[in-house]
Length: 386
Image (cartoon, rainbow, N blue to C red; front, side, top):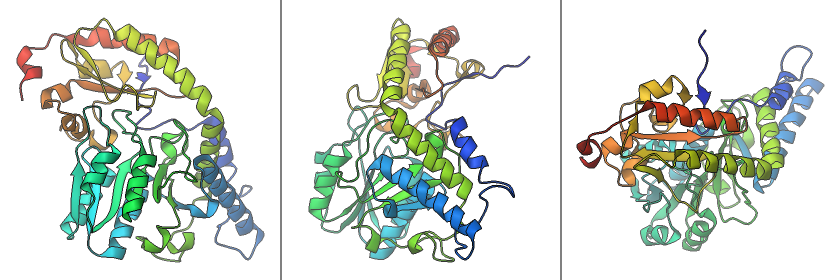
């Protein structure tokens, strides 16, 4: 009988919480809240609209925003595209700053804008995968219109001080967009205090359904943002399309749960992470990538410079990532690890383990056993070479 491997890939996606599933099901079927939220002339539509607006308030509450500043999208990828392309379209030309270790949803979008005539600066991270406010300040130009940096790196778990970066960017007069897909539910976000103009979210990173996300649009950004999907003027004209009530209420419930459970989950997962590192501590040449201080507890990037795991064998027992999910279909080593200075071979001998709501201590014990059982000697040149 085949058994599924242990799941240690929460950074790629999370299972939907049963409490989220329950509220989603209530929006499906003839006896449920199935109406079109845009149909204001009858009760079916009005009830659906009320559910959508409740979810909007739930999302806003978790991140310290106003409900009217939340725009529904299909996920963080669309939110990133709307933020970057929407600002660029308004300006037509100018300078954009991002980093070498962003998610491909930002990097590929920035490349497209570069092809369209924008100038793009891709900042190098420090050795721990952090972009400092000083580095951002040094890159700003008179024609800089937008800075786009992630809150939490999806491979390393390193955290950027976006509040401090935002002060620098706002003083300069540009807009700051933050991809926060990996940060929600893992650290507190306060957009009432943080000088951030645009922020992207996704439900499926926080125990909600796939296919739904949101973009926070602050007061400074709203008049400078052009819609990328047209056809009906939904979401204040910024994102047309019939709203998926069941997915939206799922996102709202997931965000509310994330806020209620945040401190407890961070503490529990931090203990599991430390237990995992303690058990792996006797592996010679094991390197933990990312910042030891500016980080979340949930994501762990490990490079094996001595004995390294047979990744195919390990995958039979453990669901992990050897790069981010956006890169997994290619054989290329992680662009994040390469930007940190790892050789291509060392990057290929690295794994990302990410823990979550349903990870148990016995899962950690079994994961360590699987990793150690898969180790095999590596020739010196394989790690030290180019």
